[in-house]
Image 1 (tube, rainbow, N blue to C red):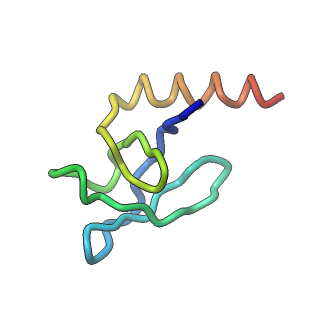
Image 2 (cartoon, rainbow, N blue to C red):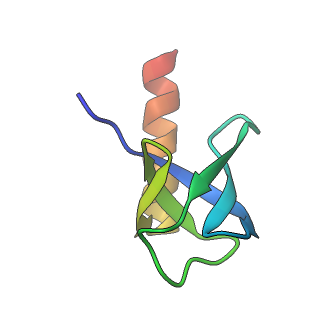
Length: 72
């Protein structure tokens, strides 16, 4: 099964990369090479280290909440 996780973009980095919050304050560097017009504060779906789409913030937060409930 493949899973894409919504993450909040914290910083835009050189070379089409970004620093994102993947939950619980954990940061990860991902690639933005598949997306254009991503800005700090956007939510992106991340799969295998790549942002694959931008996500509506309300939907992203709902998904993150559901993932947290499932982990409990």
